[in-house]
Length: 427
Image (cartoon, rainbow, N blue to C red; front, top):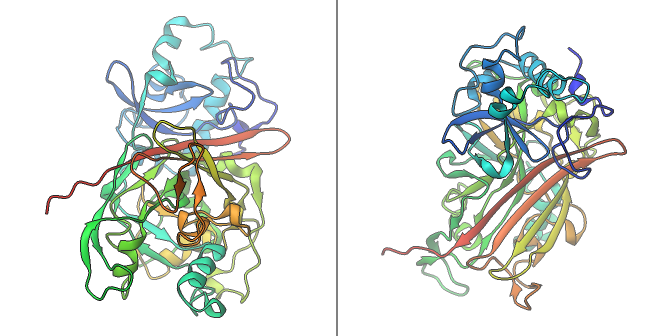
Protein backbone atom coordinates (compact mmCIF):
# COMPACT_ATOMS: atom_id res chain seq x y z
CA UNK A 1 0.00 0.00 0.00
CA UNK A 2 1.35 3.41 -0.99
CA UNK A 3 1.88 6.06 1.71
CA UNK A 4 -0.36 8.66 0.09
CA UNK A 5 -0.51 10.59 3.37
CA UNK A 6 3.08 11.71 2.79
CA UNK A 7 2.37 13.62 -0.43
CA UNK A 8 4.37 16.84 0.10
CA UNK A 9 2.04 18.77 -2.22
CA UNK A 10 -1.08 17.98 -0.18
CA UNK A 11 -2.78 20.92 1.56
CA UNK A 12 -5.45 20.86 4.23
CA UNK A 13 -8.57 22.95 4.74
CA UNK A 14 -7.58 23.39 8.40
CA UNK A 15 -5.40 26.45 9.10
CA UNK A 16 -1.81 25.32 9.72
CA UNK A 17 1.21 27.58 10.30
CA UNK A 18 4.10 27.05 7.88
CA UNK A 19 6.47 26.12 10.71
CA UNK A 20 4.05 23.77 12.48
CA UNK A 21 5.32 20.41 13.69
CA UNK A 22 2.02 18.91 12.61
CA UNK A 23 1.23 19.52 8.93
CA UNK A 24 -1.20 17.19 7.18
CA UNK A 25 1.79 15.03 6.18
CA UNK A 26 2.49 14.15 9.83
CA UNK A 27 -0.73 12.63 11.22
CA UNK A 28 0.62 11.34 14.56
CA UNK A 29 -1.38 9.29 17.05
CA UNK A 30 -2.12 10.07 20.68
CA UNK A 31 -4.67 9.89 23.47
CA UNK A 32 -6.42 12.92 24.97
CA UNK A 33 -9.24 13.99 27.25
CA UNK A 34 -11.73 16.49 25.84
CA UNK A 35 -13.22 19.40 27.75
CA UNK A 36 -16.27 17.16 28.30
CA UNK A 37 -14.02 14.67 30.15
CA UNK A 38 -14.19 12.10 27.37
CA UNK A 39 -11.02 10.13 26.74
CA UNK A 40 -10.35 9.24 23.13
CA UNK A 41 -7.70 8.28 20.61
CA UNK A 42 -6.86 11.02 18.17
CA UNK A 43 -4.50 12.69 15.77
CA UNK A 44 -3.33 16.26 15.30
CA UNK A 45 -3.17 18.69 12.39
CA UNK A 46 -1.76 22.13 13.16
CA UNK A 47 -3.23 23.30 16.46
CA UNK A 48 -6.25 21.00 16.23
CA UNK A 49 -6.82 17.66 17.94
CA UNK A 50 -8.99 15.27 15.95
CA UNK A 51 -11.18 12.64 17.61
CA UNK A 52 -10.73 9.39 15.68
CA UNK A 53 -13.49 7.58 17.58
CA UNK A 54 -15.96 10.23 16.43
CA UNK A 55 -14.70 9.93 12.85
CA UNK A 56 -15.18 6.17 12.98
CA UNK A 57 -18.69 6.35 14.45
CA UNK A 58 -19.65 8.81 11.71
CA UNK A 59 -18.54 6.35 9.05
CA UNK A 60 -15.39 8.03 7.77
CA UNK A 61 -13.28 4.86 8.04
CA UNK A 62 -15.66 2.68 6.03
CA UNK A 63 -13.78 -0.04 4.15
CA UNK A 64 -10.91 -0.26 6.67
CA UNK A 65 -10.99 -3.35 8.89
CA UNK A 66 -11.33 -1.91 12.39
CA UNK A 67 -13.22 -3.15 15.43
CA UNK A 68 -16.02 -0.87 16.55
CA UNK A 69 -14.25 0.13 19.76
CA UNK A 70 -10.64 0.38 18.55
CA UNK A 71 -10.57 4.17 18.99
CA UNK A 72 -12.72 4.15 22.14
CA UNK A 73 -9.82 2.79 24.22
CA UNK A 74 -7.75 4.83 26.66
CA UNK A 75 -4.53 3.57 25.03
CA UNK A 76 -3.34 2.88 21.49
CA UNK A 77 -2.27 -0.70 22.23
CA UNK A 78 -5.16 -2.43 20.43
CA UNK A 79 -4.81 -0.21 17.37
CA UNK A 80 -1.06 -0.80 17.29
CA UNK A 81 -1.67 -4.56 17.43
CA UNK A 82 -3.54 -4.32 14.11
CA UNK A 83 -0.23 -3.91 12.29
CA UNK A 84 1.36 -1.67 9.69
CA UNK A 85 -1.21 -2.28 6.95
CA UNK A 86 -3.96 -0.85 9.19
CA UNK A 87 -1.83 2.04 10.49
CA UNK A 88 -1.05 3.07 6.93
CA UNK A 89 -4.65 2.77 5.76
CA UNK A 90 -5.90 4.95 8.62
CA UNK A 91 -3.24 7.62 8.03
CA UNK A 92 -4.03 7.68 4.33
CA UNK A 93 -7.75 8.04 5.03
CA UNK A 94 -7.22 10.88 7.52
CA UNK A 95 -5.12 12.70 4.92
CA UNK A 96 -7.99 12.31 2.42
CA UNK A 97 -10.62 13.56 4.88
CA UNK A 98 -8.68 16.74 5.66
CA UNK A 99 -7.43 17.39 2.14
CA UNK A 100 -8.42 20.87 0.93
CA UNK A 101 -10.21 19.34 -2.06
CA UNK A 102 -12.44 17.09 0.08
CA UNK A 103 -15.63 18.83 1.26
CA UNK A 104 -17.24 15.84 3.02
CA UNK A 105 -16.25 16.83 6.57
CA UNK A 106 -15.26 20.39 5.74
CA UNK A 107 -18.84 21.36 4.87
CA UNK A 108 -20.54 19.35 7.61
CA UNK A 109 -20.67 21.67 10.62
CA UNK A 110 -22.45 19.12 12.82
CA UNK A 111 -19.74 16.52 12.24
CA UNK A 112 -16.88 18.99 12.63
CA UNK A 113 -18.18 20.07 16.04
CA UNK A 114 -17.74 16.56 17.48
CA UNK A 115 -14.54 15.67 15.62
CA UNK A 116 -12.27 18.72 15.87
CA UNK A 117 -11.00 20.39 19.07
CA UNK A 118 -8.58 23.22 19.68
CA UNK A 119 -5.38 21.76 21.07
CA UNK A 120 -5.57 23.98 24.16
CA UNK A 121 -8.96 22.43 25.00
CA UNK A 122 -7.65 18.88 25.36
CA UNK A 123 -5.38 17.23 27.92
CA UNK A 124 -2.82 14.81 26.54
CA UNK A 125 -2.32 11.42 28.18
CA UNK A 126 0.23 8.62 27.94
CA UNK A 127 -0.47 7.27 24.45
CA UNK A 128 0.10 3.59 25.26
CA UNK A 129 0.02 1.20 28.17
CA UNK A 130 3.74 0.50 28.54
CA UNK A 131 4.15 -3.04 29.78
CA UNK A 132 7.92 -3.07 29.42
CA UNK A 133 10.61 -0.43 29.00
CA UNK A 134 14.14 -1.02 27.76
CA UNK A 135 16.75 1.72 27.58
CA UNK A 136 19.71 1.34 25.27
CA UNK A 137 23.15 2.96 25.33
CA UNK A 138 23.69 3.44 21.62
CA UNK A 139 25.45 6.77 21.05
CA UNK A 140 29.16 6.18 20.48
CA UNK A 141 29.92 9.83 21.28
CA UNK A 142 28.03 9.66 24.58
CA UNK A 143 29.57 6.36 25.63
CA UNK A 144 33.03 7.66 24.72
CA UNK A 145 32.51 10.88 26.68
CA UNK A 146 31.36 9.04 29.79
CA UNK A 147 34.17 6.49 29.49
CA UNK A 148 36.71 9.28 29.08
CA UNK A 149 35.46 11.11 32.18
CA UNK A 150 35.36 8.14 34.49
CA UNK A 151 37.86 5.65 33.06
CA UNK A 152 40.96 5.57 30.87
CA UNK A 153 40.42 7.90 27.86
CA UNK A 154 42.36 5.45 25.71
CA UNK A 155 39.89 2.71 26.61
CA UNK A 156 36.70 4.73 26.95
CA UNK A 157 34.48 2.05 25.41
CA UNK A 158 34.12 -1.35 27.03
CA UNK A 159 35.26 -4.21 24.75
CA UNK A 160 31.68 -5.32 23.99
CA UNK A 161 30.31 -1.89 23.06
CA UNK A 162 31.14 -2.04 19.33
CA UNK A 163 29.71 -5.56 19.04
CA UNK A 164 26.27 -5.39 20.70
CA UNK A 165 23.65 -2.73 21.42
CA UNK A 166 24.01 -2.34 25.20
CA UNK A 167 20.74 -1.96 27.11
CA UNK A 168 19.06 -2.44 30.44
CA UNK A 169 15.54 -3.12 31.61
CA UNK A 170 13.98 0.08 32.94
CA UNK A 171 10.87 0.76 34.98
CA UNK A 172 7.62 1.50 33.14
CA UNK A 173 5.60 2.55 36.21
CA UNK A 174 7.24 5.99 36.34
CA UNK A 175 7.03 6.93 32.66
CA UNK A 176 4.92 10.07 32.41
CA UNK A 177 3.74 12.33 29.57
CA UNK A 178 4.95 15.85 28.92
CA UNK A 179 3.58 18.33 31.44
CA UNK A 180 3.82 16.06 34.47
CA UNK A 181 6.43 17.45 36.86
CA UNK A 182 9.13 15.31 38.46
CA UNK A 183 10.40 15.25 42.06
CA UNK A 184 14.10 15.34 42.81
CA UNK A 185 14.95 11.77 43.89
CA UNK A 186 16.56 10.69 47.12
CA UNK A 187 18.95 7.83 47.70
CA UNK A 188 22.43 6.76 48.73
CA UNK A 189 25.46 8.65 47.47
CA UNK A 190 29.16 8.54 48.28
CA UNK A 191 30.59 12.06 48.76
CA UNK A 192 33.97 12.76 47.24
CA UNK A 193 36.71 11.48 49.54
CA UNK A 194 34.29 9.55 51.76
CA UNK A 195 34.33 5.81 52.41
CA UNK A 196 30.80 5.54 53.81
CA UNK A 197 27.64 6.48 51.89
CA UNK A 198 25.10 9.04 53.03
CA UNK A 199 21.35 9.27 52.39
CA UNK A 200 19.61 12.35 51.04
CA UNK A 201 18.41 14.24 48.01
CA UNK A 202 20.41 13.81 44.83
CA UNK A 203 22.59 16.84 44.10
CA UNK A 204 23.33 15.84 40.50
CA UNK A 205 19.99 15.49 38.75
CA UNK A 206 20.44 15.44 35.00
CA UNK A 207 18.40 15.18 31.82
CA UNK A 208 19.16 12.69 29.08
CA UNK A 209 18.20 13.65 25.54
CA UNK A 210 16.70 10.55 23.97
CA UNK A 211 14.09 9.30 21.57
CA UNK A 212 12.15 6.08 21.99
CA UNK A 213 10.31 3.73 19.67
CA UNK A 214 7.07 1.93 20.42
CA UNK A 215 6.51 -1.61 19.18
CA UNK A 216 3.64 -3.75 18.06
CA UNK A 217 3.42 -7.46 18.93
CA UNK A 218 6.69 -8.57 17.39
CA UNK A 219 7.25 -12.26 18.12
CA UNK A 220 6.36 -15.31 20.12
CA UNK A 221 8.48 -16.29 23.10
CA UNK A 222 11.44 -18.21 21.76
CA UNK A 223 11.37 -16.55 18.34
CA UNK A 224 13.46 -13.59 17.15
CA UNK A 225 12.93 -10.63 14.81
CA UNK A 226 15.35 -10.46 11.83
CA UNK A 227 17.11 -7.11 11.60
CA UNK A 228 15.78 -6.32 8.12
CA UNK A 229 12.20 -7.06 9.23
CA UNK A 230 12.40 -5.07 12.47
CA UNK A 231 10.75 -1.89 11.16
CA UNK A 232 7.57 -3.87 10.43
CA UNK A 233 7.13 -4.05 14.20
CA UNK A 234 7.94 -0.42 15.06
CA UNK A 235 4.82 1.75 15.24
CA UNK A 236 6.52 5.07 15.76
CA UNK A 237 8.72 7.32 17.86
CA UNK A 238 8.50 9.83 20.72
CA UNK A 239 10.91 12.16 22.47
CA UNK A 240 12.23 10.85 25.79
CA UNK A 241 13.81 12.66 28.72
CA UNK A 242 15.33 9.86 30.77
CA UNK A 243 15.97 11.75 34.01
CA UNK A 244 19.09 10.63 35.87
CA UNK A 245 20.59 11.12 39.32
CA UNK A 246 24.31 11.02 38.57
CA UNK A 247 25.55 10.86 42.16
CA UNK A 248 23.20 7.99 42.97
CA UNK A 249 24.25 6.30 39.72
CA UNK A 250 27.97 6.56 40.49
CA UNK A 251 27.52 4.72 43.79
CA UNK A 252 25.10 2.01 42.69
CA UNK A 253 25.81 1.09 39.07
CA UNK A 254 28.61 -1.44 39.75
CA UNK A 255 28.17 -4.38 39.25
CA UNK A 256 24.71 -4.54 37.67
CA UNK A 257 24.07 -1.09 36.20
CA UNK A 258 21.40 1.63 36.54
CA UNK A 259 18.67 1.22 39.16
CA UNK A 260 17.34 3.98 41.44
CA UNK A 261 19.36 6.60 39.56
CA UNK A 262 17.11 6.07 36.51
CA UNK A 263 13.80 4.57 37.52
CA UNK A 264 12.36 7.55 39.43
CA UNK A 265 11.06 9.24 36.26
CA UNK A 266 11.16 9.19 32.47
CA UNK A 267 9.13 11.71 30.44
CA UNK A 268 7.86 11.25 26.89
CA UNK A 269 6.19 13.46 24.31
CA UNK A 270 2.50 12.56 23.90
CA UNK A 271 2.21 12.29 20.10
CA UNK A 272 3.64 9.16 18.46
CA UNK A 273 5.19 9.98 15.09
CA UNK A 274 4.90 6.98 12.79
CA UNK A 275 7.83 5.58 10.83
CA UNK A 276 5.71 6.16 7.72
CA UNK A 277 5.69 9.90 8.43
CA UNK A 278 9.48 9.85 8.89
CA UNK A 279 10.10 7.98 5.64
CA UNK A 280 11.28 11.08 3.68
CA UNK A 281 14.04 11.67 6.23
CA UNK A 282 15.94 8.40 6.04
CA UNK A 283 19.73 8.66 6.03
CA UNK A 284 22.62 6.26 6.33
CA UNK A 285 23.72 5.41 9.85
CA UNK A 286 27.38 5.78 10.93
CA UNK A 287 29.84 3.22 9.56
CA UNK A 288 30.21 0.33 11.98
CA UNK A 289 33.72 -0.97 12.57
CA UNK A 290 34.18 -3.81 13.28
CA UNK A 291 31.38 -5.26 11.16
CA UNK A 292 28.65 -6.58 13.48
CA UNK A 293 27.84 -10.28 13.65
CA UNK A 294 25.51 -11.48 10.85
CA UNK A 295 22.26 -11.17 12.85
CA UNK A 296 22.97 -7.42 13.27
CA UNK A 297 24.04 -6.70 9.70
CA UNK A 298 21.36 -4.52 8.09
CA UNK A 299 20.70 -3.34 4.55
CA UNK A 300 19.44 0.05 3.44
CA UNK A 301 19.26 3.33 5.32
CA UNK A 302 17.93 2.72 8.82
CA UNK A 303 18.70 6.07 10.47
CA UNK A 304 16.59 9.24 10.41
CA UNK A 305 17.62 12.89 10.24
CA UNK A 306 15.82 14.20 13.34
CA UNK A 307 17.08 17.49 14.74
CA UNK A 308 16.93 17.64 18.53
CA UNK A 309 17.06 20.57 20.96
CA UNK A 310 17.20 20.91 24.75
CA UNK A 311 16.20 24.04 26.69
CA UNK A 312 16.56 24.81 30.40
CA UNK A 313 14.39 27.49 31.99
CA UNK A 314 15.14 28.56 35.58
CA UNK A 315 12.18 29.60 37.72
CA UNK A 316 10.96 33.12 36.82
CA UNK A 317 13.44 33.43 33.97
CA UNK A 318 13.80 32.87 30.23
CA UNK A 319 14.80 29.54 28.79
CA UNK A 320 18.19 28.80 27.27
CA UNK A 321 19.06 26.47 24.40
CA UNK A 322 21.79 24.27 25.87
CA UNK A 323 22.12 21.45 23.33
CA UNK A 324 21.48 20.72 19.66
CA UNK A 325 21.91 17.13 18.52
CA UNK A 326 20.56 14.73 15.90
CA UNK A 327 19.19 11.21 15.97
CA UNK A 328 21.26 10.30 12.89
CA UNK A 329 24.40 10.17 15.07
CA UNK A 330 23.25 6.96 16.77
CA UNK A 331 25.73 4.12 16.23
CA UNK A 332 23.19 1.33 16.73
CA UNK A 333 19.87 1.69 14.85
CA UNK A 334 16.38 0.90 16.07
CA UNK A 335 16.34 -2.18 13.79
CA UNK A 336 19.54 -3.49 15.36
CA UNK A 337 18.25 -2.76 18.85
CA UNK A 338 15.02 -4.72 18.26
CA UNK A 339 16.83 -7.57 16.54
CA UNK A 340 19.30 -7.87 19.41
CA UNK A 341 16.55 -7.52 22.02
CA UNK A 342 14.71 -10.55 20.59
CA UNK A 343 17.61 -12.72 19.37
CA UNK A 344 17.46 -14.76 22.57
CA UNK A 345 13.70 -15.30 22.22
CA UNK A 346 12.57 -12.39 24.41
CA UNK A 347 8.92 -11.56 23.62
CA UNK A 348 8.11 -7.98 22.62
CA UNK A 349 4.53 -6.73 22.95
CA UNK A 350 2.33 -3.94 21.66
CA UNK A 351 3.14 -0.74 23.55
CA UNK A 352 6.63 -1.69 24.69
CA UNK A 353 8.95 1.32 24.85
CA UNK A 354 12.57 1.17 23.70
CA UNK A 355 14.75 4.17 24.62
CA UNK A 356 17.63 5.13 22.36
CA UNK A 357 20.02 6.06 25.12
CA UNK A 358 21.47 9.55 25.41
CA UNK A 359 21.95 11.08 21.95
CA UNK A 360 25.21 13.02 21.76
CA UNK A 361 26.90 14.40 18.69
CA UNK A 362 30.53 15.08 17.81
CA UNK A 363 30.76 18.65 19.16
CA UNK A 364 30.38 19.98 22.73
CA UNK A 365 27.16 21.84 21.91
CA UNK A 366 25.62 18.57 20.70
CA UNK A 367 26.09 16.60 23.91
CA UNK A 368 22.84 15.15 25.25
CA UNK A 369 23.26 15.51 29.02
CA UNK A 370 24.43 18.00 31.62
CA UNK A 371 27.08 15.46 32.63
CA UNK A 372 28.72 15.99 29.25
CA UNK A 373 27.81 19.63 28.61
CA UNK A 374 29.46 20.70 31.88
CA UNK A 375 32.03 17.90 31.76
CA UNK A 376 31.04 16.42 35.11
CA UNK A 377 30.47 19.89 36.58
CA UNK A 378 33.82 21.43 35.65
CA UNK A 379 32.36 23.79 33.00
CA UNK A 380 29.22 25.49 34.36
CA UNK A 381 26.55 26.82 31.99
CA UNK A 382 25.37 30.40 32.53
CA UNK A 383 21.60 30.95 32.43
CA UNK A 384 19.81 34.12 31.15
CA UNK A 385 19.25 35.31 34.74
CA UNK A 386 23.01 35.13 35.50
CA UNK A 387 22.84 31.95 37.55
CA UNK A 388 24.95 28.95 36.58
CA UNK A 389 24.26 25.25 36.23
CA UNK A 390 26.45 22.20 36.55
CA UNK A 391 23.37 20.03 37.12
CA UNK A 392 19.68 20.88 37.42
CA UNK A 393 18.26 23.09 40.18
CA UNK A 394 14.85 22.79 41.79
CA UNK A 395 12.12 24.40 39.66
CA UNK A 396 14.23 24.24 36.49
CA UNK A 397 12.04 23.34 33.52
CA UNK A 398 13.57 21.09 30.86
CA UNK A 399 12.07 21.13 27.37
CA UNK A 400 13.12 18.85 24.53
CA UNK A 401 12.03 19.38 20.93
CA UNK A 402 12.55 17.40 17.75
CA UNK A 403 11.75 17.82 14.08
CA UNK A 404 12.71 16.76 10.56
CA UNK A 405 12.85 19.22 7.70
CA UNK A 406 13.64 19.18 4.01
CA UNK A 407 12.81 21.48 1.10
CA UNK A 408 9.22 20.23 0.97
CA UNK A 409 7.93 19.48 4.46
CA UNK A 410 8.61 19.72 8.19
CA UNK A 411 7.58 16.85 10.47
CA UNK A 412 7.86 17.54 14.20
CA UNK A 413 7.46 15.71 17.49
CA UNK A 414 6.16 18.63 19.52
CA UNK A 415 7.90 18.68 22.87
CA UNK A 416 8.45 16.90 26.15
CA UNK A 417 8.48 19.46 28.96
CA UNK A 418 8.55 19.09 32.73
CA UNK A 419 9.76 20.88 35.84
CA UNK A 420 12.03 19.46 38.53
CA UNK A 421 10.42 19.83 41.96
CA UNK A 422 12.15 19.66 45.36
CA UNK A 423 12.71 16.28 46.99
CA UNK A 424 10.49 14.86 49.69
CA UNK A 425 12.59 13.25 52.42
CA UNK A 426 10.66 11.16 54.95
CA UNK A 427 13.52 9.50 56.81
